[in-house]
Length: 450
Image (cartoon, rainbow, N blue to C red; front, side, top):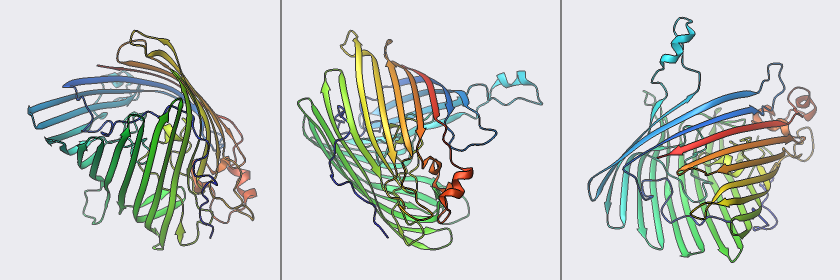
């Protein structure tokens, strides 16, 4: 068994970007301020998606318009108590059901798209604040835990959390019930708990450390590996800062624990995620290079599991905008990236009204067989992205985006490694699964808030 390989240099050149020094308090959480008493949002996203990785006679491009509508309230019945309720309706335009084949009845509408995005009460005493209920939580750069705001529904958690704010240090703890079937079956849950500490060393440097326990008692399929349960520990650290025009970031997460396959076989886990960044900033112009990686497993039939399971992160933000790596492939992924952030047309406050964000990604397996029938160490492919953000109106952001994915020789491993079972020769898969066509993704997403 070959352990997943770490890069030769722990801090290679990485995404040259102005790393935003995140505040000590977790963003989009019950502890971020200010909390407006009344707010809302309407966001549409029209997209054309033709990035399926399997050749079929029925393959078609997907075009739809998603509508997200939010309405939130925050009440403060006493100086120490806060209550927040946020409702959300998410639907695809034109998919309302019709009655008895009468298409005009679809315009009547229904209530199936309404959901509770947040609903919690929080109690605050001095530097300590705690919240119980459904809540959002985003930590650090979102590599372990993110609200996934790009998604039409976003991500929220049910449970309890606390925050101890002792400037310049900040400690966040949480215990979330991610999923419970609420049936007669016992041990049918997914629990997530842990601690996250952030320390603002100075105005230009932040250091963070964290540990989480993810306990799952439900059958899951993770890119060809089916598990009946797992107990995984995550240990991570992150450093981000800026010196003059140079910005930098490094984050490492180690995954350890035990898993059980659906056939009862026990496995131990030893996997990792690594990100490095190095950037140059000149006002509203930022140029970036970078390396991200999640470990893979080149011998998936043994008793050791080296594929990193990124269950709660923000793939769209970190590994290309076309979401080929929304789940880590069995052989892992290394993302060599170049990107930028260029602002133009300063507004009354000095902030740019138009921001252009180009990006290039080159994806390869992190650990894959290099010889034999299952040789799979060829690149997944390349991706080019381009976004334009237009902030012409107050509390608004209009985004136009485009992406193209150019498959490499191992593109057939995506989106799921289950397309390539252990022991199946490359030639056999290449006949029916390999796709040499480029993927394409276009979208228009105006967001208006109040």
